[in-house]
Image 1 (cartoon, rainbow, N blue to C red):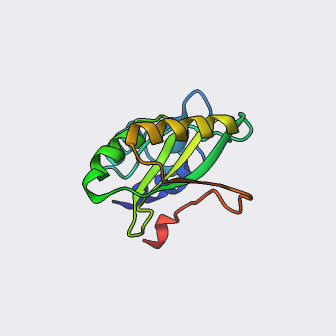
Image 2 (tube, rainbow, N blue to C red; image 1 turned 120 degrees about the horizontal axis):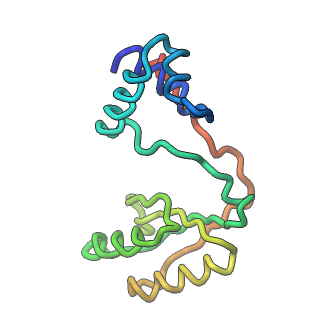
Length: 151
């Protein structure tokens, strides 16, 4: 990754230009061409450094509710349960951990009642009743920016 890649990532993680020619605006800011910016972003996506390029919305302001969930999954059912959990479009993250509750995921759905409905459906589909629902009481931080000049 060269210096322009790092500068580009520093800029776009804070905000992507909302204008008729965003790649040209980035190019002007970085002293390069629009074509080079497009190529660099495509390469960074191909390498998996950029997972997606898109808007981030405040789900609470849109009427959605979120929760952190944990489930006790027998070792032999991890793959099957992972596929069931990941099939829900409201699941944004899913992690395997070394703990009794060994699978942890976040769920964002429209309305608090929908959380209970989705978790009940997951219990039926997985055959596992032991799913705990840990809704946030307060949000203290929900953002991160990586300074790639430090790498």
